[in-house]
Image (tube, rainbow, N blue to C red; front, side, top):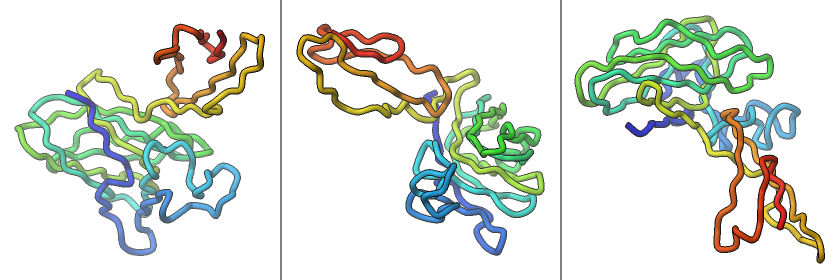
Length: 211
């Protein structure tokens, strides 16, 4: 099965009313801070989310978000990409049945995104109802969720090139420039060249391009 990805901001918000409602934060709505603020991006959001934002769980324990998915009967893995500055536990239910013990993303004082996985077992084919239940006094931010085969590959976002898109090369020099990329999943970035003129250049493991 190809891994299925669901963005946090696309989840059905089941705690949308009142003073302690969840907040869907995106590049278009509900910033956490007024930009520019240190530790936040140009949209006033916690940086390095994989889509257009995230779901900020608020309030006390209870059902906080849900989604439906058409899966065949079998065993799968659910991977959360979430953040919390204290132990903030959530638990997943499928068709009303608890599928995991309450778990929290690894604690980070700056709300850095962390991944954790839980096993699930689906009984019967067809659409299934998934509910995310908060079991602690506070909930995490949820960037995205991945549903995969057990041991399947999960990559929430492709690496992003952060260096300049073009280089000016001086005459009689072999050095072209430095490619810099980051991967929000924390995977090691590797470099390769492609295209009609790729055989005219070389790139090393650090991203340095030369003739």
